[in-house]
Image (tube, rainbow, N blue to C red):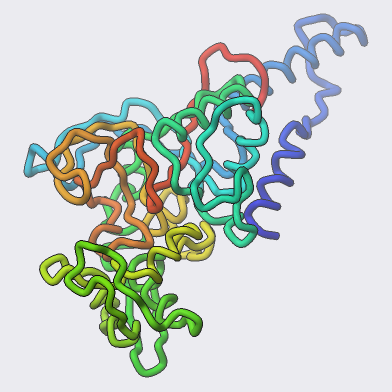
Length: 364
C-alpha cells in the first residue's frame, strides 16, 4: 500500500472507534436503561471531544512545545536567536503532494487558484502524483491551509514558523540532517552508484547523465559566455566520490548544466523531484519525513535573506533544500534562504501544521 492509499484508507475510517463495555459501571444519570443510554452517550461525546482535540488527521506527527528553543545558526545573533515555541503542535509527516493539491483545486473549481506551470491546465503529470507540489506561492499554500480548515472544523491549519519547522526537523539533539550530523552520501564513479538519504543536486545530476535521450546540450542562456554552442553533457557534469557535483553552475565562467536547453526542458516538466516517500531514512526524530532535500518548504516567517536569489531583501524564509541544492543547503539547521511570498518557484513546496481549536465543533 502506497502513502496515498494509506491516508485514504485511514481517512475513510477515521470516525470508527471501539468503546469498552461498562455494564457494571455506576452512571450519574440513574440505573435505568434510559439513564444508562444517556450517560453512556454523554461519556462517548466527552471522549470523542477529547480525542478530537488531541489527535489530528492521519499522517501528522506530534511535536512537543519547546519554550527554550534557539536556532542553531543565527542571522542576527551568532549564538542563534531565541524563538520560544510555547505550544505543542502537529506537523504533516510529508510535504503536500501533487495529488493532494489537485483535490484542493477540484474542490474550489469555482475560485481562481494558481496551478503549477508544469501541469496541463488543472491536471498534474501522472508520474508526479506522489511528488511534492511545487510552483505555488506562499499565498497559495496559505489558501490550501484555509481550505483544509473548512473541512476539519476542530483544527486550524497553517504554515509552520521557521522555528517550528527547524525544531520538528532537527529534534532535541539539533541534528544537521534529520538522521544525524553527516550527509552520508557516497558515489562510485565506476558503477555510477549513488548512495544517499535525500534527493539533492547529485541525484538530479545523475538522472541527467543517465538519460540516453538527452546528451547533447545547447547553451540557451544569453548570460552564458557559451550561448549558442553545444556541449556533450558527459563532458559537462561529473560527481565526486563524496557526492559533490561539478559542472552544475559556474557563476564566474557563466557556464553549467542549468544554463542549457536540457535543464530548461526539465523545469517545464516539474524538475527532478522524487516521491515524498522515496527515501525512508530521511526521517526526523519526531517522525516527519522528506525534510532534507526534494523541495524547499515555505514557512510563515519573514527574514532578511542571507543567500540565494533574494539575498539582502526581506522575504519569506524557506527551509530544507531541494533537488537543485548542494548538500549544505539541505541541512535542516541551514538558514538564510528566502523567497518572495507571492512568487512561485520550481524548487519550493510546503507542508502543513495543525493545531486544535479550543471549543471547536466536529471531529477530525
